[in-house]
Length: 338
Figure 1 (cartoon, rainbow, N blue to C red):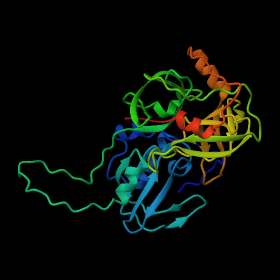
Figure 2 (cartoon, one colour):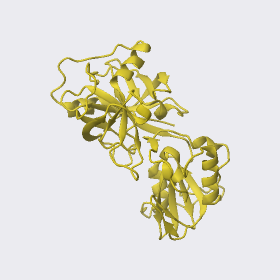
Figure 3 (cartoon, helix red, strand yellow):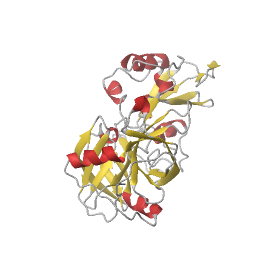
């Protein structure tokens, strides 16, 4: 595998679909060798090895299969007839070549391809010979995206990352009180990576905005749905501190935190531990095989400017909240689309 030449390698926290256009255009197809798939990705997105910089790999020796995670982990490529590791470098092992069996847009479906769930034997009725036979092991290669979001007003206004909804082919949806609710994209900013959604409902809870600038060592809590609903549909919390007031390349619109963020946290709120007021919006992090705790959020000030530019009044609170966990449970949302 190619040696990684840059130590600062970032990935969006799930939802990007940078590789989907390559698959859909036919440049990547079933039966391709692993090396050929890598070459296509590498030539389309010049840089270091696409499976190492923005993805990863998982090898299953019993099945001689391997999952390679493509750019921004938005596509999971499954290869078969893969042999045992030939060599191991700093970041990963170099397995045998293998051939492309399938690709998926969620870790769940890719894992089930490798480790199918046991099925109960059910007595079947005699089938009509004229009926078409359906292969139960086949999976759909439809594009999908998911991430986190949160209410910013009591009128159904919602903030998430633009890359979470960028490649949606249908109207995004949110999970609200165990119901699927449409949330129309009414504004977007590709530079800041923010999107404003609007759902036709009246929510009672929302995240208010801090009137103070973030400070180093400020205690924060991040909430969201890492890996979508693959682990569980329960909202997850992580905590930490503000590590730096700038992002990569001295980007002053970002804040760095050491709270754990994973694919699926994209678009979720990062709030002050005591007041529950917004500090930042989760957006990206450094590859964990290189460094831990290097995660970034879009500062509240940038989110304010985005909302005000789109005629949404920013909600501030002078008193904070006494139950931050309850506020986040009521305000943070799972968002997804086809």
